[in-house]
Image (cartoon, rainbow, N blue to C red; front, side, top):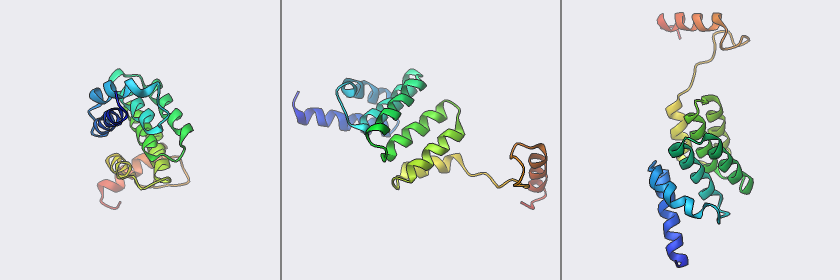
Amino acid sequence: MSVEDLSEQIKIGLFEAKRDNTLAALLILERYYDTTRNPEIIAWYGYCLAKERKSVRDGLNCCLKALQLDPRLSSAYLCMGKIYLMAGKKKSAMKAFNRGLTYGQNPALFKELKKLGTRKRPVFPFMDRDNPLNIYSGRLLSKLHLR
C-alpha cells in the first residue's frame, strides 16, 4: 500500500469517526493504531473503541496517550468528554470539554457543551448545590417564575 493510499484511508477513518459512524471508523483506525504516533488518530480510535466495544477504560487510556503526545489537542478532549458521557460521568465530561476549549475554538466542543446545557446558580451559593434547601427553594422559585 502506498503512502497516499494510507493517508487517504486514515482521512476516511477520521471523517467517519467525526460523523459518528464509529463502526466503520473503528475498522479503519485499528489497522493503524499500533504503528501511529499521531495523537488525533489515537484519540478518535479510543472514542470508537469505547462506543463500539463498550470499553470505556481502554478508550480513556487512548485519549490519555494522545494527550501525552500533544497536550493541546482539543479533539482529544472532545473524545474524552464523549467517552465520559457514555460512562454517565457528566461532570467529568464538562471538565474535559472546557479544558479542550482552552486550547482551541473547536465548534464540536461548543456543540457538546450546548447539548449538556447550563445550570442556574444555587439559590444559596454558600451551601452545596445538593443541599435540600437549595433544591426545594430553587424548584419553588422556578414554579413562581421568580427565577
